[in-house]
Each structure stands twice: as C-alpha cells, then as structure tokens.
Length: 130
Image (cartoon, rainbow, N blue to C red; front, side, top):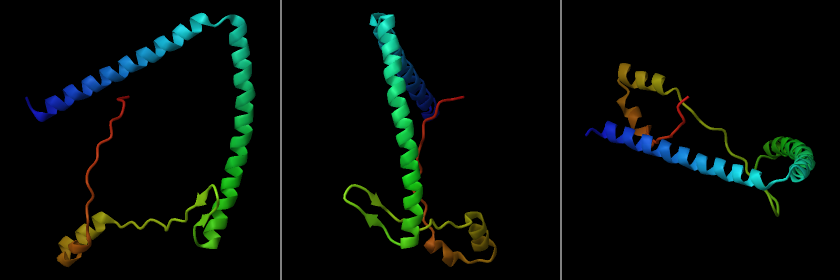
C-alpha cells in the first residue's frame, strides 16, 4: 500500500470521526429541544436577544478603543504594558521577492547569497472539501 493510499484512508477516517462528532452534537441539541416547553423557548429567545444587544454594544466600544490605541502605540514607538493589557508593537514584516532573488542567484552567479536563505519546515492544514 502506498503512503498516498494510507493518507487517504486516514483522511477518510478523520472525516468519518468528524461527522460522528457532529451527529452527537445534533442529537444533544434535539434532545434538549424535546424538554423545552414553548414558554421556555420564548424566554430563552428573550434572554439571548437581551444579552446579544449588550454584547453588540460592547463589541462596538471595544473595536473603537482598539482603533484608538493602535495608532497611539505606533506614534509612541514602543510597546505599552498596562496592568491588564499589553499593546505590543511589532516591527513591520520584511519580505523578499524570492523568485527574483533565486533568478539573480542563478543567472548572475551570486551563489554566495544562498548563505542568507533559510527555508522553514513544511506544514499541513486539513480543510473541508467544498
């Protein structure tokens, strides 16, 4: 059996486990719904709306404060640590045109540049097929 086939088998197994997990969650939700009276459902909806309004208002205030703090920290030029939050200033990310540099190394015989090149470890992300 090729490693590709075993990977496919593991992916199928993983998909099956995820589907089983979702079925359990769906069953839990349906079981809870069977014990809820119409009055309780209405009250739960009211409670959810009440708290959702509060959270929406607070989320807007949080976003406004974050939008105010970030440019101030940038202007300040260094991280600011408060008693509960730390606004961390991160230097801008440096990036290079890798294809262009590889071409320069190859075409102009600047192989000495390769000593400054590092390649990180590859990684794998598992995504749902759409």
